[in-house]
Image (cartoon, rainbow, N blue to C red; front, side, top):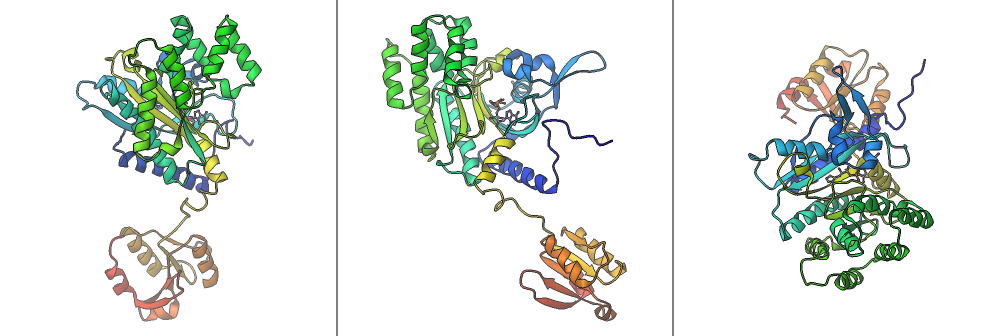
Length: 436
Ligand code: HAM
């Protein structure tokens, strides 16, 4: 009986593993150079953990299970609640701000589609505990900068991708100014988050179900189409009567900081970014491909109440998550994978005539113990077949152990790039090896 792989999962053959490792290594390298430290948590948590604050969409997509004691558990669909729990546990001893990153394997029972699977990897960077006010915007900007720093590193330009930035707080204050009751905000966000995923009529109809007054529906729709900062400034200035703090300033500050960091051309204000997760309270953002054919490459934002909601102090945080699926599709489309993902390579390929013998084992074992990768053929073919196998593995050098040469304790070392061969004494060659 042949058992297929479970729907929405992937098998990683060695060539797929090379891509996965290259993506994850890049995420880790960029996190470290931006000053983040790595953390991880368990793959399953109590089910309630994700029911508290993750929001409707994620709750519907949970893979849940019962342990032997009858406790309800769930495979993690995201790591942000785990992060909040872990930080709360050590809140008094951790130096702040906390700048942490993680690359968890996540599970969501989503309908599998292009760029969305049931098991995937997600790069997370989060900054927790930066003081209120302008400092917070700096942290939002740094999370976005780190995201762009990676995407630029792998060769994507501002013509390929855009970071679309908005603010839930701004949206909330606009909705309040239209008389929206506090308990309605959440359900309106859920509809607004679907704006770009639904046909306009369906979207307007769903909004109509949340907001009875047609005039207000139209005002919300107008707000959702503002696409420049001057236009936004006009609109929110009209709406704010006092000259007090306005969430508009957060967006301005984040965009200005990103400009100063030299990535302003990647970033735009876009009110259609609302985000599906329930815990966001301030700046929210997503990265999208300019072509528009793909789902979001990444998403994140500020969460001011999450730690408090998990029983900790009212310390705010901001962060983002980037999955490997859409990223890989986009990089493939742009021809950026093939030329960057390292091919299989070995330092030495040891060839010998006939079955592998004492001398070959000695050479292979010594090379490996000195830290070099060394391989050989199991096929017992002639020299040319073995050299072909060496080329297929991109060997840098080949060691040729021939019967005649061996009578004088010599071997040949062939440089596969130049084709040059050297006849050397085996013991001398092995003793002169320096650690790789
Ligand atoms: P999210 O928007 O649910 O946010 O997911 C972020 C990213 O994870 C998406 O943009 C996408 O790249 C990837 N992703 C999500 N679902 C799937 C899926 N089914 N298959 C493949 N990739 C997927 C969060 O998860 C937040 N916890 C991020 C965050 C961290 N916010 C603050 N800190």
